[in-house]
Amino acid sequence: MAFCDLLRMTVLLAAGAATALAAITVVSASASDDTLTIYVAGAWWLIALAGGIVLGRPARATEAMRPALTEARMATELPSLANPGRAALARLWPLAAFAATAGGLGLVYSGVAAIGTGFALGAALALRSREAAVLAIEERDGGRFYVEPGSALEPVKLIRTPGLRRDRPPPGHPPPPPTAPA
Image 1 (cartoon, rainbow, N blue to C red):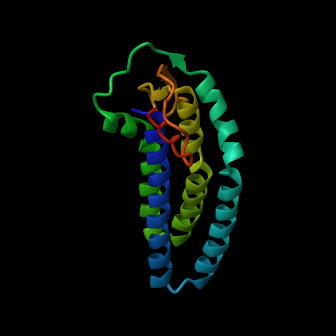
Image 2 (cartoon, rainbow, N blue to C red):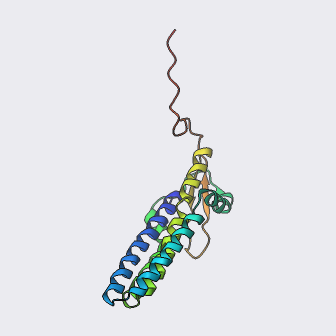
């Protein structure tokens, strides 16, 4: 599976988990007339929002991606792309398990879902710029990064496939006009 796709799926799953957990928090706290949990959750979510924005700045994303990208092993052919869904599931199941556990406990204890919402929100915002950082390197070098199959409990290992430099102009720059015939 392409590394950019895995990063995109991680952000979307974390944001979806944050949304679901926030809904569980509000429903659970409203059912028990627990206004204190709602206020504390709102403050925690603002802190997580600010932290995620700061940690997800593009400059930090580039620095965070550097070790994984530099340790990528070179391959002369494309890796097997038989089932990208299985590769994504193998890498993202801990995030889904976290959301399911926090959501289940949040139905009884609304504070658990509130705390889980903050963590998922912060993670989604902190990871949001990493895909763009990897795409920029792929555009510059013409190669692609793929995820080696492996456990979610191990660091991500990447495969770098060679590519040709792109012959198209960078985004925002129109191609030169055609030359007039003589």
